[in-house]
Amino acid sequence: MSFMLRTATPADAPTIAELHVATWRETYNHLLPEDYFTEGHLQGRHKMWNHILGNPRDEWRVAVAERDGGIIGFAFAGPAFDPESLDMPRELQVYNLYVSAAQHGMGAGQALLDAVIGPRLAMLWVAKGNPRAVAFYRRNGFEFDGTERRDAAAPMITDASMVR
Image (cartoon, rainbow, N blue to C red; front, top):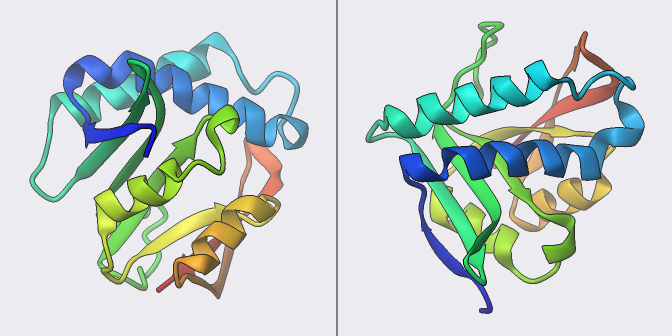
């Protein structure tokens, strides 16, 4: 393994926020409105990660993968939650798992998933238009459960629920 895994700390929040936006640009830029990545969007990610890492909970797992002193990927899992109050098919949810495109295929994504949920049953939302992610989750035992939704801010992306 040419990277190192560790638990994220509050000091990682700015780097994770920047990587979060960068990986979305790499993966979804062609599916998002031209004005999607505003300064407010970036500030929102900074606020989100400062909150998550600054207010840790025992039931949250946030891991980072590092190579050469820099964070190349991160994953976040915890109790299943949906702001739309949908019935959740599992008690555990993977909220985020992103690896820089330059680091794809090196095992960081698998190591991050294993670090935050291990072999446990879980659910997640994945963009159906992201075949690499769908294939990754299928290799890890996840299958679509038929639930889909769209975000008004990103209408070309259909999110689908996967469970294992």
